[in-house]
Length: 184
Image (cartoon, rainbow, N blue to C red; front, side, top):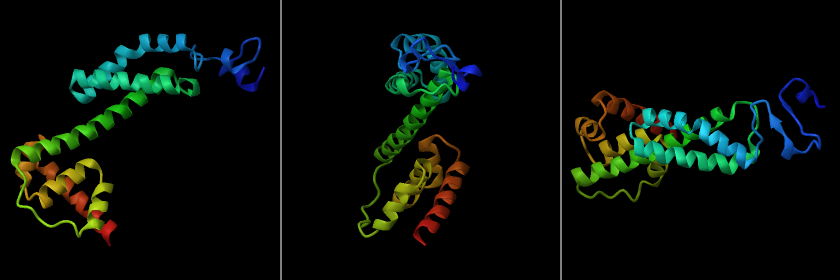
């Protein structure tokens, strides 16, 4: 018996193989039956968390399914340092954050489509600026591009994105400060 088994972290079957490993949480990494049990036990909790986080049940269902698909692919490598439900929750939150980023980008595209493009400007000579903008957080990048590239007012941006005008100003200030450092 290993020290880890002695302190209750996990135990091994009679053959001592990794495939017979049973964790203290009652799951065997890589076992399809155990993953199905995990799915059945935790799906509704994870879905409820994502519905609250995203405010959209359909999007939450998509994210939950994506999270469980990713978890299933990584299931053989799951380490019993935390309950498997917490592990899948972390994956689900990461999927939801990625979804929100993509949704923000889609919303910016929709704002531009609704408001219309400003007069065309020559921005081809600003490669460093484009590179720096791509390194900003998505929300800051969206605010500064809408303000300075497209020329929209903070009020118009706030209305279009559904955020307070002060938040737009804050994001622009933050983006400007980061851009100064990056482009210095």
